[in-house]
Structure formats: structure tokens, C-alpha cells
Length: 124
Image 1 (tube, one colour):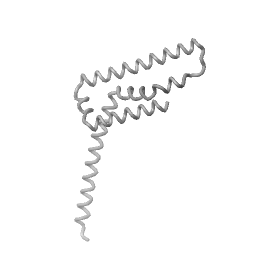
Image 2: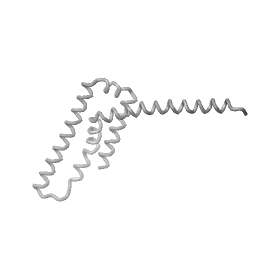
Image 3: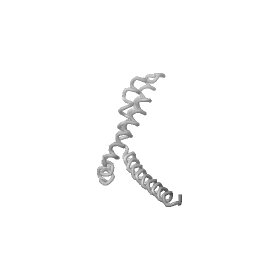
Image 4: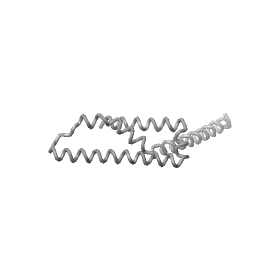
């Protein structure tokens, strides 16, 4: 479970770097590429679901009560990264977060500038 969480965090870091480099803006501007990424992410999630169901059926047939924790953790990092990168909503979130951050920085700058001007204009 920890490796999957680390994989999701790594996927977020990759999306953040892609947003910083402007790749996310290109991705959102190109609808076919965005759609292809969305379909690839959906296919990967379907694969994970089918694999999980298959393992559950095999375990039930063998009547195993203890889960194979080694197998569950071996691929957790990869699954976390791929499921996060395959989700184009993460790209959109990072793009929007960047725009909001810039807008807030600009607004904060204006407020601080106005405050500084007002303080400078007050008689002493």
C-alpha cells in the first residue's frame, strides 16, 4: 500500500513538472492527444480491475485466506504512477492550479503595492 501511495505521489510530481514545462497546456490544447491519454488510462484501470478479479477468483478456488503481500507490494509503485499519469484530470488540475496560483500571486502583488503606496502617502 505504501508503494502505491508513493507511486501516486510520483505521478503527481511528474504531472507538476509537465505543467511547469508547458506540456500540460499543449496536452489540453490537443483534444485527440488528451482523448488518447484518457483512453490509455481507462484501459490501464480496466486491466488492473480484471487482474484483481482474476486473482480473487483464483484465491477463492484455492481457499487461501492470507493475501500474497509480496505480489501486492511488488508492483504498487508502478501501478500508482501509471494510474496517476493515465488520468488526464490530473493534468487539468495542475494546469488550473498553476493559473490560480499566478492569479493569486498577481492579486497579492497588487494588494501589497497598494498598501505600500498608501503607507508612503500618509503624512508622517
